[in-house]
Amino acid sequence: MTEHLGENAELYPLGLLDDDATRDVERHIALCDACAERVAQAESTAASLAAALPVASPSPALERRLHEFARSQLGAAKARASIFRFALAAAVALIFLGLGWRTLVLQERLKTEDVALVTMVHSHFNHVSMSPESPNPVAAKILYARDGSWMYIIADKPGGSLHAIAETARGTVDLGVLTSTGETASLLVRPSERIRSMLLQRAGTNVASAKLAY
Amino acid sequence: MDELVEAFAARRPSGLEQVYALWSRLFFSVARHVISDSARAEDCVHDALVRVWRGPNRFAGNREMLKAYLVTCVRNESLATLRSEGRRDARELKVARLAPVSAVDPPVVDPVESRRLQDALGRLPEEQRTALTLAYYGNKTHVEIAQELNVPLGTIKSRISMAMRKLQTDLASAEGTRS
Image (cartoon, rainbow over all chains, first blue to last red; front, side, top):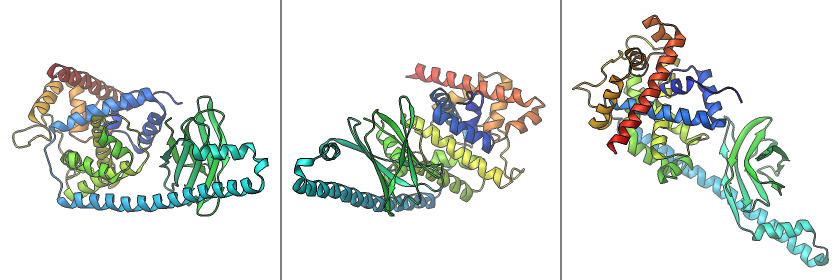
């Protein structure tokens, strides 16, 4: 990590830094808790300075614009959610169908992987939407067991090969490339240690990230 | 986590709408102080809120922290717009207000808070108060302030930084006394 922000922590919320320095601050505080705290305190002080500004009220048009934007995003989110629900349902159905067929035909030859899949379907799990990053992000979700034993990453319209990078207590782990089926891409992993956060990269660029809570 | 913060961080439309309902006048007042044209100031508020709401967020704190963060974003968006349009001229720039509150300019927040701020500003060493006031209320860059006061740039940065930290301590102390 680069050295701490120093005086720039106070200059940033006042808008005194140029574009490059502003980006440096934003990148740094994403990684440094101490500087993030210092910037947050400076932001609070800067917000207090607004107490002496002359009051001004926006026109109703601004509220309408934001309302329309918010509603349009709600529609988009519903569309994305329906795609995810379909993909998830399809994935679970395939798992069950696959297991059912094997159970009928090869009942005596159930393997460890099959048991893991049964465990996954029946276990308690959480899910999280990944935060989009970069100007060309990807919409993705992660389903993961509350005990951290498995994780299923699924991305909508991957737009190219997606690479999954996990962060654990011991550092980053390359989980490999998601398997693409065109409209979606997915990856099922059984991590050997607890994953704290996940990053998806396309051609070396971060396109989505998420922190995982257990 | 606060319900409003959670809704905003989760990118729920209700989070964006509630944030606007609570602090729209504050955001607009901050933008309007930088950009005198109301329509462009509204664009800055809109763009800043939408950008923060859509992008990766870093706030996991309380409501006041979210407000402060958004105020910073609105101010930075407004200053960036002003600078990118190259209109830092006499018509666009507000004159630095060494005494920002006056009888004809009602404050954005309650008079008690405004008074506390005025008192805290008054307790700053004069050179620090001047630098901070020119930066915030005068919308000047630290380079411009250094030139105007004929003081090295590093000194101006230090004065502003120290002023902010002293103000922060002073306001926190006053808050503790009041509560």
